[in-house]
Image 1 (spheres, rainbow, N blue to C red):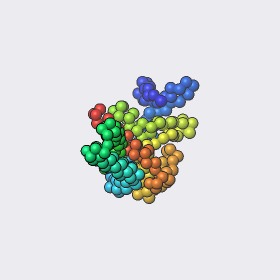
Image 2: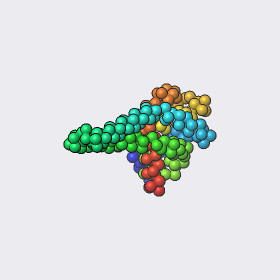
Image 3: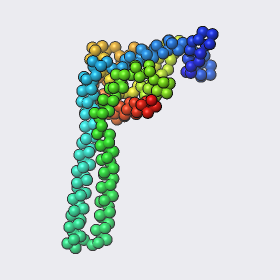
Image 4: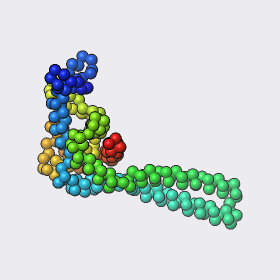
Amino acid sequence: MTGYVVKAKNKWYYKCRTKGCGNNKSAESLNKTFDELLSYFTIKEEFEPLIKEQMKITISGLTKEAEENKLKIKATYQEIENKLERLEERYVTEELRQDLYVKYVEKYKQEKVEILKELGRLESKSSNHEEVIDLALQNAVNFTNMWASGDWKRKVRMQYLLFPKGLHYNKKNDTVRTEKINEAFLWMACQQQVLSKIKTGIPLLNLRYSCLVEAKDIKSNVFLEHLRLIIKCIWLSQKTD
């Protein structure tokens, strides 16, 4: 939907651009609905410390496999170092021809390069989890204010950060729906409702998310990737400002 103004009334409306749709709605009304929707994803400061600790525990559990992989990779790297050392000893004692020595040295060195690349990739994703958590929560606590004070570009970025596939409005039923919600924001909203002892979900989206309370039900790669998207959005917003 796109916005337009009725000059005679000096009021803004949203209109569906799909041919034959003819759907339009007061901007004031839809903006109010969106503000209400944002309130479910805006974290209250009183719950911030508890949600932070729970998120640290959750991410620790989700990244356990990655930590185990890093240990295996480091062990493999040490094995190659040992092979190179033995290779050197055999070459020095003339147990190994020069051509074979050169061949295997190059082979092991290339394996070391690949292992270091993989190790660097894993460490870059897990080294800044604490910072990611802090920034994600900072964003969630200030979500409503950031939306209210942001310019058009920031609002568009934030909208698609929270709802990657956008929002759909049904004029007949006066309801909003979405195909996808940023899993990290959804998780925080769910935790807040648990702490508030309110488990109604998000009525505006006809959504109940009790299944997300347990960390085991969260997909690790999706959850962590959505956290990174939050940080990217914050960085872009600050750069624009």
